[in-house]
Length: 77
Image 1 (cartoon, rainbow, N blue to C red):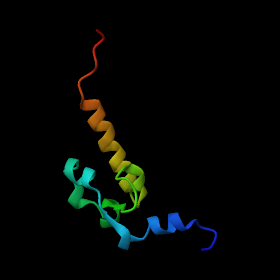
Image 2: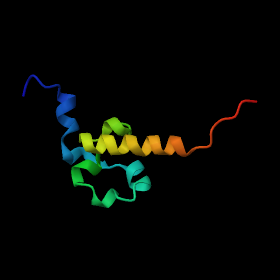
Image 3: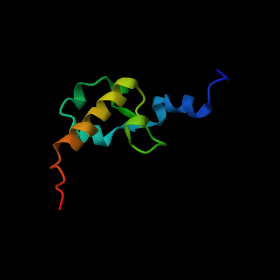
């Protein structure tokens, strides 16, 4: 394991993680996710890339994109 960056190793350490507040707030199916898919690394900003799993990352990004798409379009003045 010495060839793996220590920051990457700690990213997957569930002892230093917490549930993603963004996903918890916006995803009605958040409770049905597998526990690792709900978690983000505590030492990182709560963005999609902080998720511990690829599935968690993808679901977070989908929520972000859905939120952007639901905004009213900007009109030219």
